[in-house]
Image (tube, rainbow, N blue to C red; front, side, top):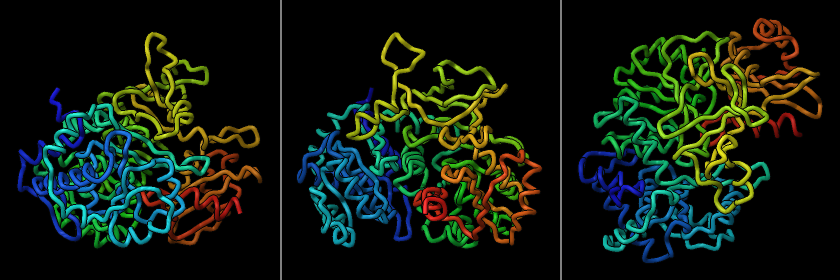
Length: 510
């Protein structure tokens, strides 16, 4: 194996040689070429090696607004042989303290404003300002020496998810996971050096792995779409048309709001050819709207928990799905395996629902500095007693249909039992989204009051009695929610998903 390709930053090294002065990233402040990105990243890596102890157990937090500068820091950390940690620039400071406490990072790279916000905190680490760090000189010998010590099973990045105890969990992903995933992407989808990727995801959301590393592998250009544009669909479509974006990988929430706005009908996007989506369930109503007005695109429903390298399964949408149908999450990606296990840890038969468990080079190394919760989630494959064979229990309920496609049913913890009836809250959400006037739906269970609360995003008046009658066309009476709460716009997390925790706190756990 090429020693350089044991690190994910080897993709940038190869791209900088092959594509040199071609633009790789563009944001609202400008653009950068492959060669310039490598040059600046090597400077950051050199400065880290010189100023702190780097390596696989010395992560580097990147606390910057979403920009090219963030990518320079990610690659700089990899050049120093350290994993990088993308952190939301709007992160609550109390959460930042908990994250840093869990990480014990070698350094934090931020800007002047970020440094001022962080100084009062008890972070017990060095804080560097990006502009000062990148003004140094590259020590290529030191960088090459650091890279020479990297193993492909060392951590490449750490992404934090919310823990049930309130303590963030740092999902740790290896270089091998990134390398195998991007190679599979390039082999499977029509992305090449002529492609222009429109980036929606925040860097602390793992869809961004696609947006960055696909560009390195193929020579494509990635446009970092200004976040403000996602609030104005018409301006967003104008930007995409002017930028000639040909590929997007977005969360369904953004696609839903775009479809609901009506702009797709009047804003042609002739260059857009590949539309990937993951992170939530994509409603058929809005997916069909996209397919109606952009019929020449390839649509792919992707699935993957943060505990994997972005994606585990995929399904190429080849027909229109009715509202009552469930969109498959499809078949496993290359270098990945999927097991569907019942409550007795036996393989489920076709059509039998069970928990989706995954294995392969793409599953995470575990949770950073959290061996107990790692052991609970990443376990020995119960079907293999011959050798060590780790699987990750996703907590997602699925089944395999006759065509060999996996069908997502919902979270194990979103399956409830109400008055003796087992209910999938995801089924209720899909049914609610099929009712006229509903743009999006979110169902939560109020255990204290033994009732389902359904939140509806709508721009029209919803009369609860009429809505419930309409809903009964799609679901049995015992699934009809006790409470219906309407709002013009759902709150969203920084990654673009519906903020279910926020809704629960405000309307249920008061």
